[in-house]
Amino acid sequence: MIKMIALDLDETLLNTDKTISEENVTTLRKLHTAGIKVVLCTGRPINAIWDYLEQLGLTTEEDFTITFNGALVIQNTTKDELAQSGLSRTDFEPLHAFAQENGYPLDILDFEQVYPVADLKPSIYQKMLKAPMTFTPTKFDDLPDHLFSKAVMATDPETLDHVVATIGEGLRQEYHVVRSQPKILEFLAAGMDKAVGLGQLLTHFGWDFDDLMAFGDAENDLGMIKAAGDGVAMLNGQPEVKSAANHITPKSNNEAGIAAYLQEKFPELLG
Image (cartoon, rainbow, N blue to C red):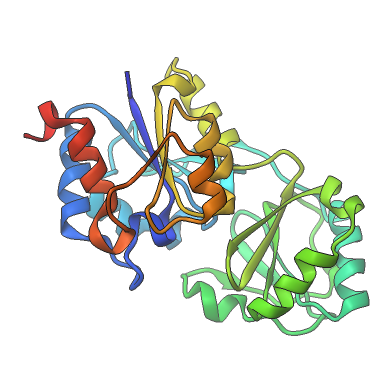
């Protein structure tokens, strides 16, 4: 029995214009009211998606969000941390050396702000993110000695294609490397993805992955798609995600594909 619905944002729940369709909002609100947990799963911090949480009514004391691609599970209203994991500045030394040697940009994020690495090529991440986060350009050696959530390379798709093609096996073992968008390549702790955060949240409620339905479209959604009792790929999703999924939505993200699938699966709740 599905008790929790996990939702990626970009090109999944969100239209291409970064809005949620009214059909998706109405459908998810009905299921939430009926007692099914609705959980947004994103690489962003919670303050960057707060408008979406309010729009969906995910503001009760039992509502949580998976942020930083699984590294932080946070209660929506109190901002209390259910689970947190990450990397130290030292852990990023091999990645910094790789970026420096090849002329790539790098942004390193903790759980509060972004540090564009100032001794590297300038990044386009701030322009792309368009979120209410503090960006503090900092040389790598001057980064604070605390826990970080991830690092990001944000640049043109052709450059990232080259990064993906040439990155060594050593770095792939050091980090979980995922292409979340054509212009964004993310470096997480090894083994970290959205499924990790969802597993912690399911355990909190006394459930397991058989109780989870997960929607996604891209490489950084693969973990939760594979782990979920019902992993659902968007019609507009990447071929690898579709191949891993149990089902595919009948419509794309721009056609309220999530609502269309949920209406098929929960007719008794949605009428």
